[in-house]
Amino acid sequence: MANPPDDMSAFAGEIQKMAQSGSFNPFSLIAGETRFHSVFLAPFSPTLREHIGRFLADGTGPLEDVAKSLQQQGASAVDAQNQARQMFAAAQGMLVVVMAGDHGLSTIPQLNFGHLEDGYCDHAVLACGANFPAGPELRAALTELKAKAMGNTGWPNLIAGPGAGSKVDTFWLGLAAMLVEGLDEGFTSLSGAGLERVRDLAHWIGAAIRDSSRDSGKKLDEDAAVLTARCHLVAGEAEAAAGCLDHLLTEDADADGLAELVVHLSDAAIRQGIPVPAAAWLDTFIPKFETLFGTCYELRIARFKLMAAAAVSTERLLDAANQLFAANKKSARQDLTREPIWRVVVAPGATLETGAAAEAIGKPVTFVAKRLEQGTIPFHRQVVAGQPDHVRIPEGALKSWLAVMQAHKLLD
Image 1: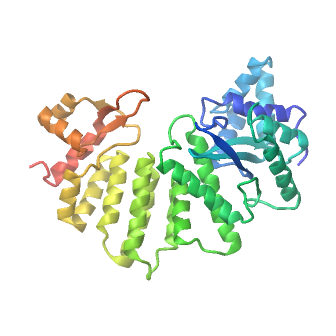
Image 2: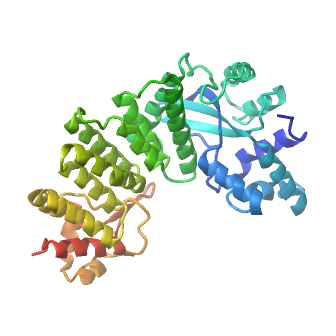
Image 3: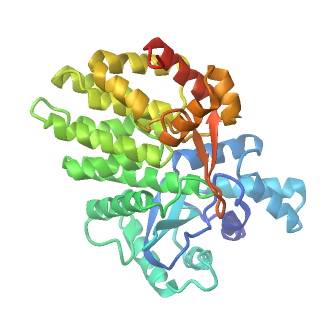
């Protein structure tokens, strides 16, 4: 591609400085000591493509801050808009610097304009910070990346750096393992300003594993399929997550082992606060599984837990409860009344204090308080750093809970 306008590389750096409040927040590293792991070139993620398209269409969205910052630096409103539009129109994809450490993965994504010329590479290093300790290593990796690109290497093989190794599929599966481990250990957050950055990385990992597997003609083994499915779930790609495990779903599959894997993925989705895509995935997976192996209560209760965590509508939750009772009435009564499966992990909407909740369901305050303690009534825990957890009862989820309790006579 032809070089962008002379000042385009400088504008690219403004992404790191100006988009802190939106869902494109590429320049904040996780706490703790990190090291330079690798760098790769990638297509735009769906989220970034959407944001760029919106900005080019009408100048709105999370990338508005780019034009605003240019205006603060002295450009007129019209010039700032035009300059920002030029930058995003010229961009062809992303250059992503990956940092790794004991606290998981973090990234420094930057717009790429279809080349890795010296000036652009200088800027890429500067964007990592004045005190970035791995400048020489990153420069060497960028030189290697440029050589690969000039040799007609394409996605997902455009990787370089000390953590890249010689095998593309091993590199991407390694990133998947580190991302999943960081999420499970609580080091990598799926909330706050870095949410979209984590989801973008999960998308790139999932897409790269899919594409490298397709190019090599190799099927994913069980461990690789699970890691990839979890990345797709983090990225909100339920259909792709289902596809990762669908190829394991054959007549000679270990049904119990496969169900256990699915339950693990579902539990992880709740811990990570992303129950909605996981529930959508199970909507398609369970019928396929049960066609081969018969009714599976474990998968149905996993789906119900996801739906409770997502505070779905009363109609949907009632239907899921009916399916539980159809599979195993005794276990359903036990799980719905005695197991802590009612925590809402999505934004809860309107909430109630204990007294108001007791009044809404026609029960004493002690009834509600006891079930809050047990986790057997819907609740949402708001975690604020340095403060005790703030527990509220989501009004909509409580209504759905009450409907399930009444429909199956679980309050008698």
